Length: 200
Image (cartoon, rainbow, N blue to C red; front, top):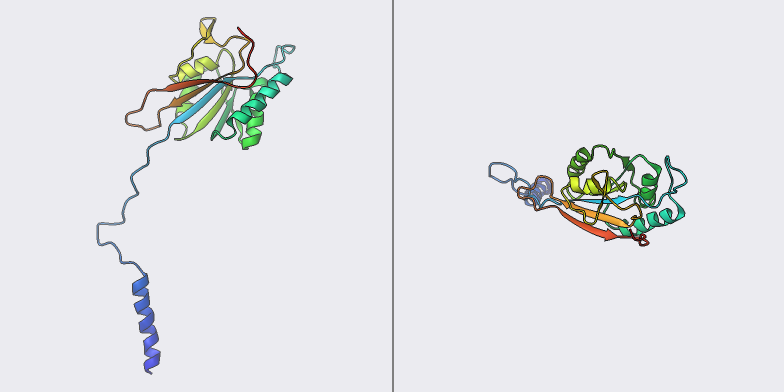
């Protein structure tokens, strides 16, 4: 009979060794301290070259399509999480190659309320990287609404705009992380991509 009694006692002893003892404190430990919040980055640009023969809703020219491919090469490894475009063919086509490369949907926004759209962008999740395709007369306004800066703009009916010949300017605006207690100032970096635009 003894061998039959030893097996249960051995199993019980083994379980006591394998199962960790419960903490005698007030309860389970809380999560580790939160990691530093990540900033939201907005990359704003004007649509690529358009076909001037269609004044209503023009498509991109071959040169414009080449610039859209240049944009894809530039941003394919930039951690892009969101794509936004106005509801025009030229702005959507500018982001189409990047959307296909990253398997992201292009979300439509209204350029008539840039302040509201800027608030929406600022409220994206920490670490978000949004690419926004707009127009010569809306891209500078969006950067300014985000709190960034645009240099060397022209005036179009009293509002800042890009020169009509400029298609290669790209504005990277880094916003404070949502929820940051002491947010740093907004930073804007201007880049050029693709074939150089014609002089103003």
